Length: 401
Image (cartoon, rainbow, N blue to C red):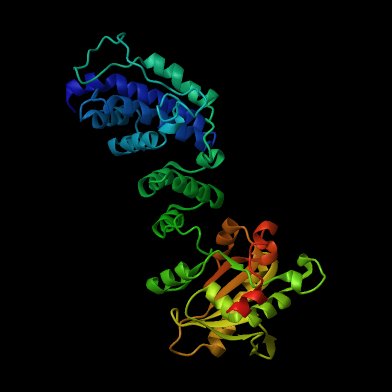
């Protein structure tokens, strides 16, 4: 290593070393937050000194070599990874209260601000500046003891610090929108995603398809083109405005069971198909399935020409339950064994219920081995009264047609 570079970048390496040592002590307690705070601070330090031309192009490589010499066995502080720290800081510069992007919207927080100092005896060339090590030591401790997360709208505070640094880098690199990054941070923290799973979610554009029906199509339909078609075929919510439970009887809407909703769908199956999607053919309701003497009667059975597959729909008037997926698995197994034609693709199952927690559905459905999805539906009764009053009466509309 060039002797001049040792002299030039020794103070910077010492500054980063002190941050590493303090971070290692704190991180030994098992707090991911501390590691991210250290990387954020070092990233900021590097950004301030490289983006404005204060350091030469060999700075990070020189600093990395000094660190490896002084801290044998040190990992994660190659020149490349220090650039990653800079990327991490610059991607989340909104956490820096001194950033112009946050001046109007963030509360002030105590974070490290690396300042130039003339106290250092070693002079750097015109493109580099000296840094007061003691000043850095004082300020970087504040990160661990007094850091406060600014109030940013929708910012996933708790999730952010539960996501490992390598996962953060992947999210930053592959998702450019702020809301998209929030989405993947939340998914990673909530589901404890491995890197490979996170990579798959981003590749499949889970954020962009969040309005599509939560399903496991991509993992259970081997043909990628067919899987994409299935994902695009179904929505996560349907307005079945031809169903009005008030007309069924005097009971409360909550007491109406699946069979009554099913009957209204059957009576208006053309409208249902127009709402549900294209290329559907109605096969039947309460379709009789039997295997080993055990009978089953799935609510609705369709065939979709585009997917070349049977589609079984199970209706539920309440909130989604995981037991519905097990029931659907049984139907799909019997359909594949007893009903599916040799030239057809494996059947697809849909749970159509009144309420469902999307993230929960996506979490539990991924472990099922048959292609299934969960959608919700609303009826006329679910619509606000003022909106319902603007809709034409179905019978009057039929007369006009």
